[in-house]
Image 1 (cartoon, one colour):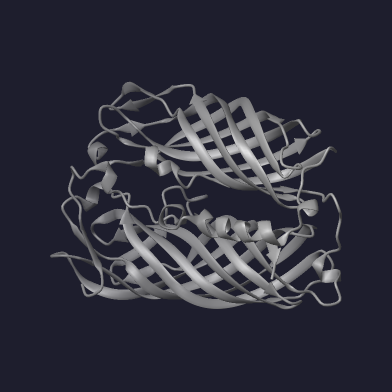
Image 2 (tube, rainbow, N blue to C red; image 1 turned 30 degrees about the vertical axis):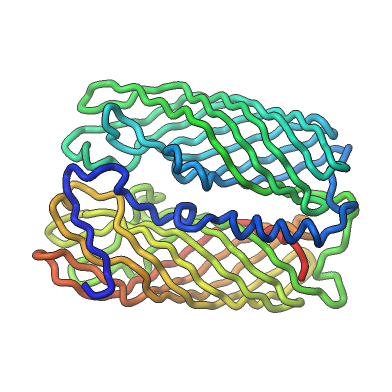
Length: 425
């Protein structure tokens, strides 16, 4: 097909041929943030970016961009913590990641969820702007099998159960503002092995791994409190980084004749697929803003008389104009914009063996939506967001089975997230 991609699916294709469309593996999400933070170091005076002796709570978000190099996929981590003083703190950490399981050949992916209470020992340096720390903790884990490999298409594979984990490591915080730090952290996760089964034969599954993340900590109060931007007589322009996650529902699932998109395997209630993404934007004055969003979406491909062939992973990158209506800490907003989607076939299913799937690549897209921000601090807000997104000229075909054609589809998405305002222009 002109401008498309062709994937021939064989029963013995290597596990490394799997292509993920998640933003985490297509875009180094932290590269842009690192540049912003480098600029921030020169913008914020040293006296306004430093640690504190007092009790201070925080929220943390981290992502494992480098970890696919050693077989860990889609790792993200959230934390709620408290610094009791300059040297001692505690954090409740939640981590999620994927890792292949099965020996001698991988038979599938294992998704794992970990909830760990952790202790942090801290030691501020460089006039309290740089804070090395040690961290350790233990807690429960939940492991579940996901997306069987081609090598297991003819096997009965199962994996599900509770376990527990112990983690220890070290990190480094750098204060880029009075209450915002950039964080680099390395931990080793030891996960107690549980048994999966292949054709009824137990097989131990060990998900222990080193983890290395980049992230942000946002403290809920400032050393020198400043008024909300909405209270300023002439608000300036502010750059921000954000994250959102939630669900999407197909509002038009017919792709081309005889082909429909369905919720992914991990759909909530069998109806809503999981979605999430990153935000980079600038608020301009009181009421205007521009924002670039990057979201990942996965759907199954169902073909009449054949069945489910694979998942269609999409990365949506859209540029939006945002209209804002501040009222104290509350900021309702609406937006509209356009951009592109990039699609790839992944996580193939048994009916796809021997078929040549055609399609994917870059295609146009647009969206419209709105939401509500609530500012917990001057530079940190929580948000709820809904949007309708539409893409067209999406190609799909199967050589010698289904003629190539173009079609469109649309989704409705609802997400929760946050924005961290990094610096002023």
